Image (cartoon, rainbow, N blue to C red; front, top):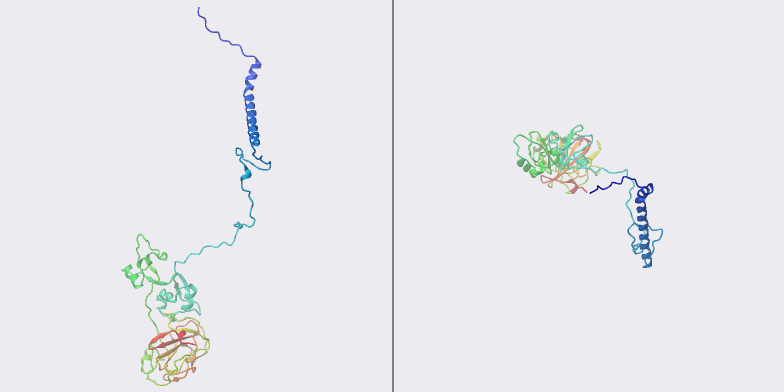
Amino acid sequence: MNRSPKINNQRPPRERRRLWTAAPFIIGALGVIAAGWAIGLNIRSRSQAGDSPVSSGERVSSGDLTDLSALPVFEPDIETKMLSRAANLNTSKPSRSRVDVLRYTVQPGDSVFGISEKFGIEPETLLWGNFEVLNDDPHLLKPGQELNILPVNGTYYEWQDGDDLDQVAGFFNVEPREIIEYPGNHISLVDPQIMPGTWLIVPEGRRAFRQWFVPTIARGQAGVGAAYGPGGCTGTYTGVVGTGGFIWPASNHYISGNDYWSGHLAIDIAAGMGTGIWAADGGVVVFAGWSTVGYGNMVMIDHGNGWQTVYAHLSQVGVGCGQSVNQGQSIGLAGSTGNSTGPHLHFETRFQDGFVNPWYVLP
């Protein structure tokens, strides 16, 4: 007869239960002892093979017990130049080129030449940027006027209804893209529409000047100068012929105002109010008195050899029409008459109806 297996419900003794609880700790301890014994054998075998022991002062990473004596010795070079990391409070801010137009108020004693030099532009640019105020005449400059100061050399143009970009650019001798791409004009490159009344900077643009001056008057041309003011002479004259050489017409030999350039065909010689002015060479007076083109009181001398000289802005004229004068002879006093911002002598030298830079002929 078959019997079912018996199930033993009795608990093991207390000692056996304690042994099973401590078994994991005993096994772990045996593992640590075994690992230490293996490492010891490894070190002993290396020492016996002739490896140099590692000194107690050296640090070796675990798992890397290579021969450290073969490595290069670090010897710091105390003379090696290094970058300083010291704080520098005097930092500089990078400058950016100006692209917009400034406004400047003319001060007493200013000149077109002086203002343009102050802002780093050509005198022509100052006139081209202010045609409505100066009308291409540097002698119209007066204190209190407000001028446009362009950021670059060139011209300033107000766009008119019906203007064509190619025609405007061609008039100023530039490429159309120079106008469109200049950032100060704020023109969209995607849709370059320009509204009438918009003022445009034309970089490097140039145009002819409208010149304002008394034309050359020869001693034999009766009545030519009368159209330019009460100082114009009406007769034909003969007299002294010049030497062909020139002296300074004032005691000072330096500029005070405008120098010679395309918009100012003369030099402004420093001369205080009422100081003496004399003839740069001998000749005959063909204009003596007030002029109507901004020169104020003016004297023109024809030297009889193709040369003429002009002396303008005088406070007083000391010679008359047809009078012969010698080189160095007094002809008037310096002043600031006509279109002038301060006392000086406006001095011109002309040869055969053309203008010559006075610097070329003065000693």
